[in-house]
Amino acid sequence: MIIKAQEKLKEFSFNGAESWVEEIIKALQFHANSLTSIQLNVKISASSLYSLAKCKNLKNLVLKNIKMPTLKN
Image (cartoon, rainbow, N blue to C red):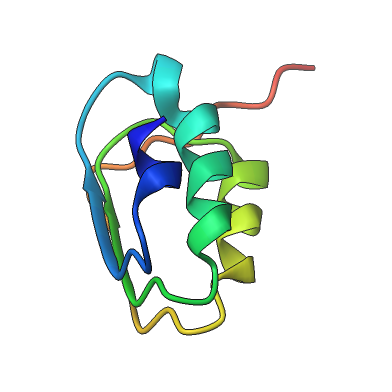
C-alpha cells in the first residue's frame, strides 16, 4: 500500500469510501512516530479512532462529518 511506502509521513487526509478505512488506519500505524496531522471525512469505528492514539506526535486531528456506527442491541 502506498501509505506504508512513504517515509516519515507527517500529514494525512482522507475523504472517501469507508470500505478502505480499516486498512488505511492500519497503514497509518507504521507512521505513528512521524504523523503530526490527520484529517478524516468518513464513517469510522471507535476501535479505529483508538488506534490513532498510537500517533505520538499528533498535534492536529480533524474529524469532518464523521459518522460513528450505531450500536445494535
